[in-house]
Length: 107
Image (spheres, rainbow, N blue to C red):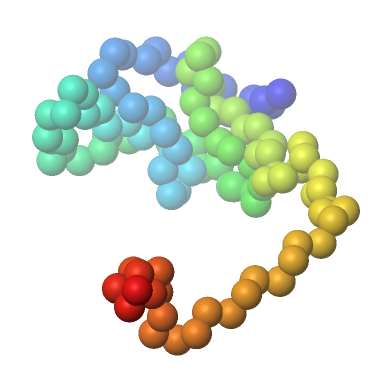
């Protein structure tokens, strides 16, 4: 589950993407919809928070408008690696330059 880091109380508006920028502040930018070209507007800083990020966590603006973090899933942690019980037969080597079509043409 996610834990709240900072209470900002941002009210979200439709059509905007809210995120934490590289300085740890909450910013927003206009979303591109329906294949339309994205506008070249600069992102707007909404709240100055200054969050210090940790590795292995995902940071986002939650539904209450506060900054939260959640632990990221490790890839492959749910599945255990399955070893093959039977060995495959080694592949046969094909003579260089010989393909099925070349063999058929000779016949």
